[in-house]
Image (cartoon, rainbow, N blue to C red; front, side):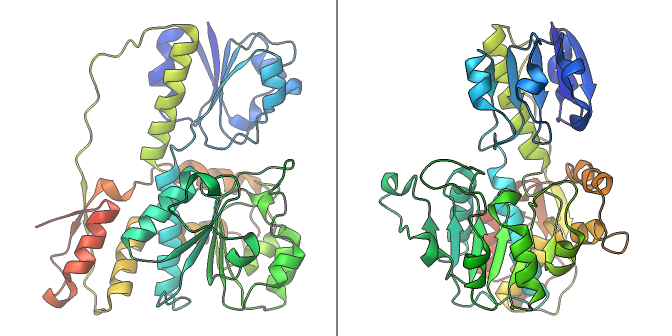
Length: 383
């Protein structure tokens, strides 16, 4: 058996090399010639999988280490009898933590005070649900918008898109679609962007095409007071330098990148691979979880709980440092830089990996409610 795989898929060699010839390539280098004699293809979102790529090949199994599948021509794959596996939900926690880290950065930069503000979560799939759970643990109220699942979740309050867009904080978590009753392509177009209240925080950790990037650029250039945080862009990896200059925080589509998310995605794909080819799992016993890493927090003069929490979240995931990397070269990012940062960020760890050392904090900073929130988010707290 021959397996062609994106070399940046976590644990790909360890998982697949026992099952045949494994050829590792950059995801952007995978073309028709490379897959012609392959039996299985393992990709990420940067590889478009369609008839142009697989026509004439012997590929019968495709797995993507991503939750989204808009880079896969599912209609063609199903018609061709090619099995498809995805990793839906594996990065939900990582994306939710990215949103929290972005809000934390805005708080520390005095751009945001949560106060009595609420968050509109647009898209209530794996990621939207996980973000809702995290915000609930922080007692931050939410409204939800997702016409596809509203009827299935009567315990939650759902609203229309127009109502959701009146919220002071908006977080997008929809797939990218162009058909159906509620297509998401340019869901936030010129008209809707122009109606956002000044001071609104708009976070896109879904797909770049959900927001009309040209319209967003014009809106931000008018100094509308909109605070934009973009992790997803149109025409990735060749993103707009002007739009990057105008957004408050910009990152190269890494919200779902973490060691834990990547390992989960790889394991899900691998189990699908074994089932499809009716192969045994050659591994013996379950792997051991690595011990938590001690995260020493700096001494702070802060006593306000919101800002103390923001400091912790920024220590665990520093969105500003990623933003600074993307703005290298006088704010003119190229595709190579975009991809290089994505490759480095894969070592990011989720909250559950950390044991917080609060020895440098004063007694009045160690508020029971704050410690309870940190534990609820997954952090360990050193006694």
